[in-house]
Image (cartoon, rainbow, N blue to C red; front, side, top):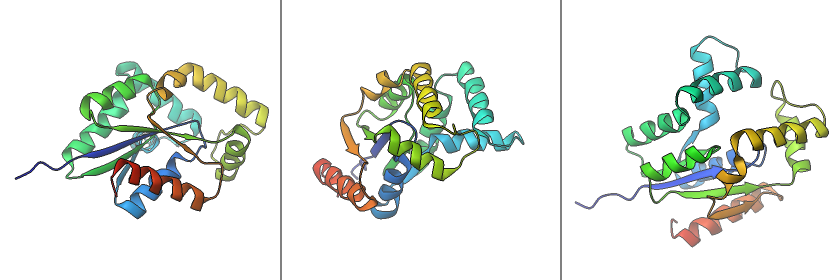
Length: 187
């Protein structure tokens, strides 16, 4: 009996770039199981009986990452390994330790960077209307700068072997995902 091949994609990119949209395409159109690291954090917040605002989720995330920097990544890996999945996409690779931990668990993982200009990301994030979101573009850029520094995102993003440009329509994005899967010979 042949071992099944595990196909794992890790999505990374700045806030509002469309990682979730790529994950949705992979899940709905290609049968990938999807794990969003942000949802793992929000689940922890809810378990504690707290309201999942950006401030609260950040605080809980920081607390758990102080105990173990790869806390949420290890939770995702555990979920994947306990499943019978053969295709999985992880939305939200943020820290260099995330990259290292996933590579140790799944050496064949493909990291994909989703890119969009800041102005478009700001508009998309305003439409989401999540609590605690910066109300001006200037504050958005400052928040992003601090997040990039705090999480060392530039180092994380170096792990991406592929880039998806999400400047266009949802159909443009879907076309890029299809082309990427064909290039990987995963269709």
